[in-house]
Length: 362
Image (cartoon, rainbow, N blue to C red):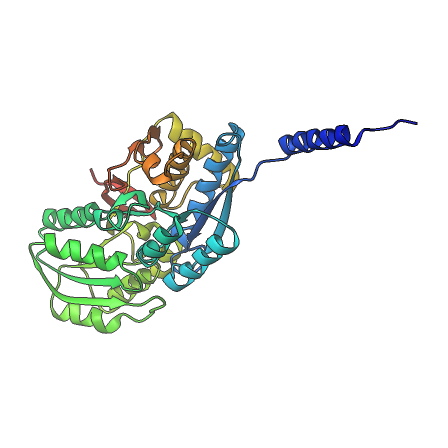
């Protein structure tokens, strides 16, 4: 019979506990993702999720962050601010997430104050401008520049000697109204008709008729899939001028709604750089999805945003936001480094829609 001294037994128990604790898997670092996966704005989110997961897989394969794996938790907000707020509360209160990628522009504004109280970092990989970055210390953006989107359209209007435009813009959040304001500030011509539409609108004939009556040279379409309907209806009632738009015109759903009338649209778009890193990302994306990304500007920045977080997380003895502004690395969108306010803005360039795809104009 073996007799075990109780003091030794306690020591052995503690030793076994320490061994088991060391062998137990460490808790993952959770990153929330909120954006549209369904609805008229789905093109803004469906590939962003894939890009985020590719980056997370790369980080995890390389050993994670200080030995901890990253985990992506996904919420579909249908590009609706109310749904985004509900998704945020679930991620933070139920899933204990303290980093959230937010792809719905208005949601960043709706969540900024609460996220600051919750000590949650909000990261927008779809939109970037000084207004957004200056919301609070915990708000970051790595995305296309809102001001440059409007500036490109103004430049193209001037090149084509467009003197008068009508504007149709989505108003279910703050992003497209902001683009509209930037355009209006820079455009030297007249804007006799501006029409704001909510999500789900399918009849634009009345404002379009007013624009035709005002003899506008072009219609500026700042929105999502519904603008394809507006293009079709504009041509049906006799508009023969130019269409100026955003990169959402590359959406297959928008083009289906336009029924061929989107061809020739001049639009602002992001021109992704070429190189080994970009090619490697593209190959991984195609392996996962069986196709290339639909909307580059909603895809590549998300990939770089996750890698920016992975670079910053090991330095978070003090604060993640403080660590992020010190990050510097070569990403697929360029050489990433943030302003003191937390912004990395990517300029947009002019394109024309040709056979359903984006063709650079310069």
